[in-house]
Length: 358
Image (cartoon, rainbow, N blue to C red; front, side, top):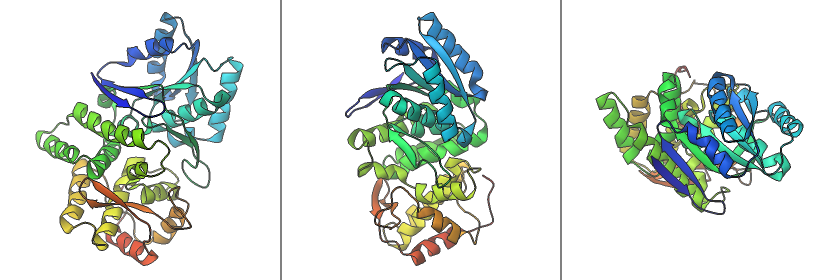
């Protein structure tokens, strides 16, 4: 079993191993919870029931809390339903929430835990690759509004995170591909060994998930340990996300997050190349790795104006300027805060191709 420690004001441990879901209930018991709400999606009902049985076995009362699938679960209606459930079930500050599922489930579970009685503990149990390396780690919680994604939320670090690598082998191929975007991102911004592992895995026909996940999680843990509230360093984790979130919004969240981020990274690479921050070799490396993993690197022509408007709502913007995280070398990032509309349009033109299915 691998352990990654997140330091800072509220330190916690990320546990990474095969078949460790049975360790969740003893942890809930250990933190003194009397009741635990298991926030989960319908497809994981059997897993949630298993955890409920484990909780009952250690004397903790489970409360099942099923939510809509994917981004539909990250809404005010869902949050309100969960708050009402906690209230009618008599949850106190001593009790806890478990976020079981993909990123949408861990996001809304964390947000409800952050806001119930001004904060109760949450244990994250991510079951998708994307959630394992991104959503469940780092303490960002939130929900969507009509205006944009994750605009309402709170920083609320988990009590602990349990990553059961066995869940990866239950995922459909498209979820593996989408989730790989966040691992590839950490390879470009901080740990190029991750990119080598993807190359090696492609050649062998299998991925070394334990090392890939551990390395990617370690990158994020190191960043959030130094900057929980995204006041500076943590912004590097948004590489590819400015255009990525805009694509998701324009597609009404029917595109998978990782696919949109893949296009966003390609866009950011073109911006950096046009500014002379990276060379053609590193630009081409983006296309090579993203294509190798199966992620899209282009988007439909003629959509720039709509995407530009969506990017004006990005959380990283300052003083009305769209700000981008870009590379200045492999494994090194900077911010581009003065990109002109013409530069953005040129970078977009470079990735404009007939729509790829997300």
